[in-house]
Length: 409
Image (tube, rainbow, N blue to C red; front, side):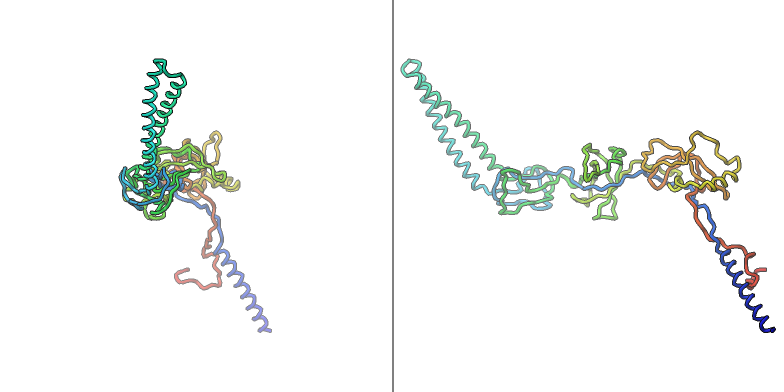
């Protein structure tokens, strides 16, 4: 009988210990809601526009040929430096020289005919004045003379054209620069019947480059000439290049219903690292403020629940409450604003365990932070949300069955 009683007492004790341990465990790891805050700090804010573009030489000339023929000689290659007027290629002139010889022979023949018809007309004219020859003979002599004269003018023009074509067979550099492209080889036939073929591409000065960037229509209104630009290229990921906006083109470019505008950026290239055709990832600095009070955008988006607001206003001393203002709103400004008009809005500040509404005046935004022109000081804590944290209960909830830790009473 006594054995059964002891067994029952032992079972009850084990159950009691388990219950107390469970309660202590849950009480010791209780989840409590707290305000998630960030400290107001000072720093720099920049309003930026990002885009991509293509690096190009400021002046590039496509060198072609106005006559057809076979490439006989090439005097330059890729990356060759040339001066204006330098011979860079030559076409085979056999056919063109033969055409010139033929035309010059025709010039002599037509000139002889002109001289004969002129002398004949002058002789007939004298006889006609003496009433010796008929009108028809006079008219025929005049006609032959005028026709020969016209033929001579025509053949001289043809001779000039053939000589010019012969000169065109020698291709010269139109500007000082560097050959960035060569599209022909010796022996290749080029035909200039309809379109002038491009033989070379010469860039004027590779130390002076430009970036042609595509800016979205939503951002183009913020871009102005003279703004500073930084950009990187994949070839030199650790280098940052600087430039300046020099032109905002008005022509709209529509691709798949997306409207963009080209912006030209001056990009000095003294080290010749930038090469035509490279893709540039650019950042346009629309505006920049240094050492200003700033807060994260989340602080403006946070809105406490009705219950939280009721508790907050019931606990706030009268000296800390906001005076009633007209159209007091908790709405926050969009980060896409140009910040040309500073806006008033409200947010919540944590102070001594209380949450207090605060009216602030906003300035510039970079999409992550907002400049606070008035209403906050560095070191204050603004609320950006709620978070659940585990809080341990005091020793009063410790099981009486657990042994005391050293140093505890």
